[in-house]
Image 1 (tube, rainbow over the protein chains, first blue to last red):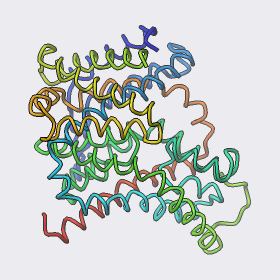
Image 2 (cartoon, rainbow over the protein chains, first blue to last red; image 1 turned 90 degrees about the vertical axis):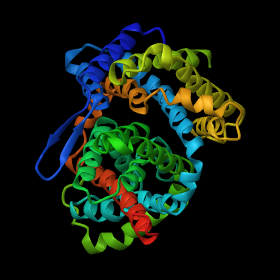
Image 3 (cartoon, rainbow over the protein chains, first blue to last red; image 1 turned 135 degrees about the horizontal axis):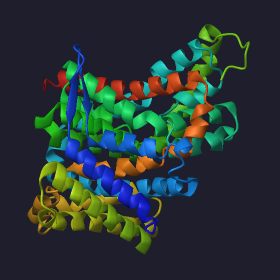
Length: 265
Length: 145
């Protein structure tokens, strides 16, 4: 991984350009869109790795993904070092932190499943909406239904979407919701701790840009919420989310599911 | 493990340079903090090898957390040094690697139907919005803000 100097030099170059551009905010009238270095480098990387351009090969892209996994750990360590001095503050918000995790777990199902059925998805809907479908969730669904089942394909589809545009989407959503002034920055920060590394980083980054005075607290509470999602996520998924989603599907599908005329996918 | 440590050091260097350009913290000023962050990560990875039941992410958070709590000797120095590294500056190189790995998923992405794309947006919106909403409701009920 280390040997691929081309990869690292591209990253260094992107980072320097991205940081030099800095934060930009666009006012849309109703709210603002926050743009910041994390998003620039993500987009630049996406362009360079675009298969048609042939600037990078499959092996390099896989390597980049491998480094992503390792380097995220540094981010985790940084956030951990912010948690230590702030434990009283975190315990003080303990009830909110516990309850928001319920929101993370239910949030995918409550609106995801009905909409999936309304637009004509069948059993794919279970896999697609029982969680945010990151790696641990994929493992859970393929263990229960098999990777090539409709449920497995639904989960994989959302996984791919998440990899391709999850971070950017959550950053824009978080920045925009933040700028509306409905929610407190700390509540939004907890919302940002969705349990996926790059999505959490991008969403909390967007919030930090939108609320510069609360940047430290935003990182702190996003980190705490993300840690809870990471620790409890798998258990909640196996024992709660998946069985509940499957049950809800059986109940809701005859009511609002569309008739299967074209092998809906 | 050695390979991973080298990668961590390399990302650390890139992040230090980004931290310099973006947040005006000189590399000399940022170096001790970054070394500490790399150290926490390596210890966490080591512990994860010994006791793999607990994910590396949890081990690393725990080590970094303990080292910065008031019970740990020298915690004030550790907190001050790690604070020199802006969390956004550390995340930037990570997302650059994420971007560079995107190409490999584009082919499978193109094969997805529109429904799954719509649902993935709904799913991400749902998890973010409901967690935010629930946190906000509890804070309001407690009269915090």
